[in-house]
Length: 179
Image (cartoon, rainbow, N blue to C red):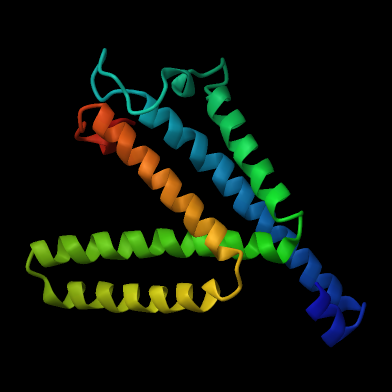
C-alpha cells in the first residue's frame, strides 16, 4: 500500500491497488475455507467402513448442511494465527499466501516429473523439471523478504504432521478414493 501511494498518490490507482489486494486475500481465504475443511474431512475417514482415518474422527463429522464444523473451526484458528502473526499487514499476508501456493506448485511439479519418468516420457519429465526449477527460483527470490519463511515453516510442519498421521494409520492406500 505504501509503495502504491508513493508512486501513484491517493488517487484511483491507489484505490485500485488496495481493492485488488483485498480481493486477492478474500479469494485466498475463500478457496482455503472451501477446500481445506473438505480435505480434513476426507482424511478423517477411512477408505472402507470401519477403517481408521488419518485424522481425528471429529474432523469428519458434519452438520445437517454437510459442513464439517470442527474442520472449519480448525481453519478459522489457523487463519487467525496467520493474520495476528502478520499484524494484519496485507503485503505480508500476500507473501505468505503466494509462497504457500508456489510450494504447492513445486510439490505437484515434482510429483508429475516423478510419474512421467516412471512412464518413460522424457519430454513431460523435462517440462516438469523445468517448471520446478522456475518455481524454486521464484521461492528463493521471495525468501529474501522474510515472511515467506513463516509459510515454508508452516508447510513443513503440516507435511510432517500428515506424514506422522499416515504412518500411525498404517500407511493407508487409496486416499484419493475417499470421496
